[in-house]
Image 1 (tube, rainbow, N blue to C red):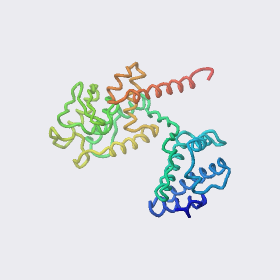
Image 2: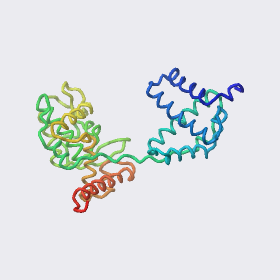
Image 3: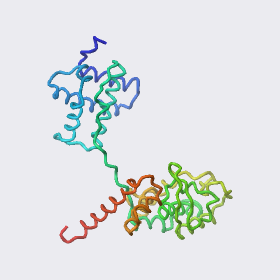
Image 4: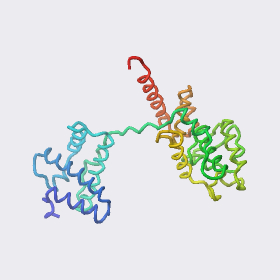
Length: 309
């Protein structure tokens, strides 16, 4: 170990990359990304410490050194986004874990370092007109009419009731015909009461009328072409086909219909706490993201319509 203490930083980096390629068998592109990130970090460290750094210098970096590195990434000549800084910090952590395992030399400061908070992306809702195109227009799916009715029923549940696609596909024979409200167990085993619009109940009833399969009370009602349980990928593929046929944006997905359900309720004056309950969110902060979506929509309308814009 003593003989390794003065290993130049470049050799330490090369050993690390060899470890990623050999022992961890990471993809070449991934290894190249690590090499780039750690090279930048070691270059910063050499300038920060004003010396040709070796292994002990790397191991001995204090908290202020890590913070200076993150600040340089945030405010340098080419400032990085919070997400990119988090990626760089993750690479540095991986580098130090390798050093700790190989030379039994942990760095005490790095676990105390927190990167910038990454703002969660806004839900990608589609407009009301786009959502209605998907739900109301005849889908004319390839195959028998019952398949088109099935797809339309699932998508009606996503937009008209705010269901996740997995929740829609979990409905069983005991749930039909759909009442004005149903009890649903969703993500995390959380149970909620979901109101059902008449148009949604009618779409499901039409599918049930056309399906060629006999469905027991405990069996999922939505079936694939050969009678097996319908997989989410089938509905996702159908919406991808519809995007082209109806001229919809790439953001139009089955899950976007759930986002649209929440956003359009909020735009229509819906109470945030009620929308939280309808969606089955554990935390109100998750639902509050939709206020940002609606604000962004209003900003776009203002920018496009105001005579001084």
